[in-house]
Each structure stands twice: as structure tokens, then as C-alpha cells.
Amino acid sequence: MKQKIILDVDTGIDDALGIILAVKSGEIDLIGITTVNGNVSLGKATENTCKILDLLQVGEQIPVVPGASTPLLRTEFFEHRVHGEDGLGGALRDTPVLTQPSKGFGPDFIIESVLAHSGQITLVMTGPLTNLALAVRKCPQLVHHVKEVIFMGGVVREHGNVTPTAEYNMYVDPEAAKVVFHAGFPELTLVGLDVTRKALLTADHIRELGDTLIAQYVKQSTSDYLERYFERNGVRACAMHDPLAVGVALDRSLVTTQKLYVDVETKSELCDGQTVCDFQNRLSKEPNMNVCLAVDAQAFFERFIRALKV
Figure (cartoon, one colour):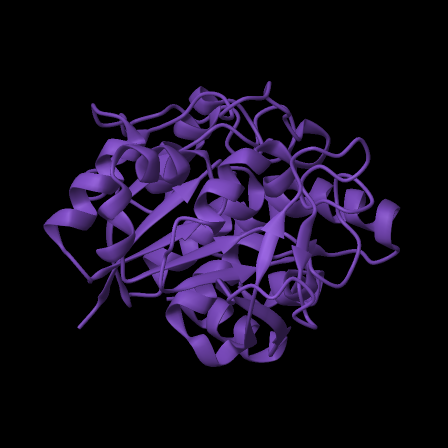
């Protein structure tokens, strides 16, 4: 039986690849996609999501529901330098939008869907956690009806990617992350930079995809990203942050996890958005999430390439 999933995205380049993996895998019953401001504005994230569903020819099958247009307390912080002004590296800039978003509000859609399928839905969050925080605030009992929350965000052993200590999604809305971290979800899984930086899409992987329409899109959308990553990290590659979160939902054996206590900094001049992981139980707190610490990148890419070639 296909597992039921809701994706929550701020559709930039890697979110789009995550959506493509989720749809092309054939293993997911995608209940819907909620959008949130992050890499780009809410409007652009929603438009990009619809364009990706059009590319996959599934636009009429999967509802796209816009969510929060701003973080809980802070102003927007977009990532145009990495994802381009359009969020997709220019790959679909001139493509008309056929799929239209559904009416409603992302957090409400999450609540209604989860309660209607109690214990069955996994939430895969690849943008800032604003929508889920709003859903939890409105419906605290939601935590008892979600099967699992898998979120791409944070870093526990290495450096950040927007500040020296903070990963982008956590930095954009750390207050939302704090709400989610302390909400009481029985299964909460952090897929952070510690593992996503080890899942690097290269030109060789792109060549393996062949010359399909999807392969052409992947090559075009990631071309500038590869250069930006090379400038910062000395490796010409695209870190598969968001697709790996989808991969973890598909196959937990791709990662090694440890149950640990993690909190997020919200009141620091230098470290806002830092995910603080208590490896030695210094805080004497009960572990609140599964933290991904290692990844089988080869197995992930075998799954990713196999799905996209179908």
C-alpha cells in the first residue's frame, strides 16, 4: 500500500526535485502539497509547484494549497542568489502555468487531512516550518494523529549554509521550528546538512538520467546552482537537501539516525536559527527527535535516478 504523504514546500530548485522524486517514485499517495514562503515568496513558491506538477502531467491530480506568506515573527529572507529570481534556476521561466492552486489555507489543509486519515499521513517539510507551527497552534491534538514529521532543516555537527551556525530553513523561521520541536510529535525526524551535503548531484548523475524532458529540466535548473556550490565549497554539485527528505520517507534505511534532544536558538545576535543537539545529555531533557547522522548516498542516487528514468 502506498504511504500517504503531504509535502510542504517553498519551491526552489531542490524542493522541485523532491516533488519530482515523490511523484515519479510511484510509492507515494501524495494527498496534497502545501506551500510556504522561504526560498522565494509564497506566490512564486506556489506558481513553481504548479509548474512542476504540469511538467509531470499530474496537475489535476494533486491539490496545491498556499500557506503562510511570512514567517511567524520575522520578515522574509529569500535565497535568490542560489535559486535564481524565479526559484527554479530559470528552467521554466517562460512556461505558462496550467495548474491552479486550490482554495484554502495550507495549515488548515494539513489539519483537515491528518484528522481525516488519523495515524496514516507523513508530513515531509522541505521549507521553513511556519505552516506546521500554525497548524499545531490551531490544533494541538494534531501531534497525536500524524504518523511522522520528516523535515529538512538544521545542522548538528557542521557549519550552517546561511550563517556560520544556521541552516536556511531554521534561520528563516526559528520561532516556528521551536513550536514544532516542542509540540510533542512522537515521530519527528531531522534531515539536516550533516547528511544532505553528502548527497551531491553531479554532472555524472545528470548524464545517467538520459535525454528525457525531466532530465533536461534537471540539467537546466541545476546548472547555476552547481556553479554557486562550487564557489562556496570547491565542489561542482547540487546538494540534494529536499530530495533526501523525500528519500527518507521512501526508505528509512538510507540514513542512520539517533534519538536526541534538539532545540533551536531564537534570541542570539550571532546564532539565530542554530539547531543545538544535546549529544551528551547535558540538558537532561528527553530526546525529542530522530537526528540523521549518516547517509548511504549511493543507494539514494540509485533510487533517485531509477525513479526519474521511469
